[in-house]
Length: 270
Image 1 (cartoon, helix red, strand yellow):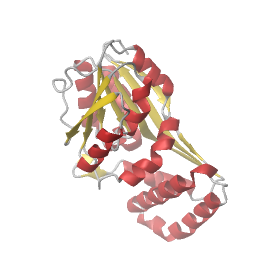
Image 2: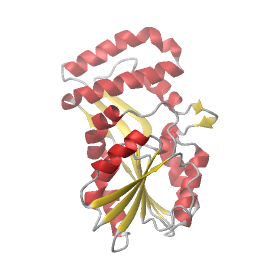
Image 3: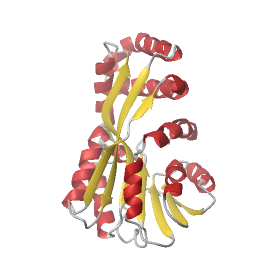
């Protein structure tokens, strides 16, 4: 699945990896495990980045595993291949995966992805659902943004920046209209229409005094994206960021960023 904008940096992925690991819904991973066959597993990780999903999930799955790692960035793929646990073998699969189909999923026991669905279009999500269900392959799709952001203490401009950010997430890039926070319900509906049983769970980031570097980087990106959609906010940006970053530096700012995880089990009914 191709990233729609500039390549995602390895530094950002490393910074967010602990928060991602803490947020993912362990109960969905446990349910996925219960539906996997015995023996060596083949797992396909879509948009794998540096392999954080594999590092989080491989130890929660049984036995020997072979991970097929998909990303368009060769440098990230190199990191992912070498960064997985010792009991896992891995192969890189570079390129754009928007044309993934059931034939390419043949022999795959589990499809995974992390922070990916919101970067796709509705057609791409529907094709992914069709490929997984046709191949009778479970899918564990984690950390899709929901559009919910709660900053404490509150600021009068929080709602304006949040609304502009959500609109930016739904922007059109290269003729592709991204789903953004509409991705979790769109994916659930797509899998259910094809007869899959879908289980969803919240997976929010909960950031506080010990997450200063991540809070700052996330906040700057959040505000920048909001201003890209609503340039009128630019006159408020410097003062707003200063207030928020000062609160974070004092250990007073708490941030809850909404995400959702989804497990689709093909052929088991809606």
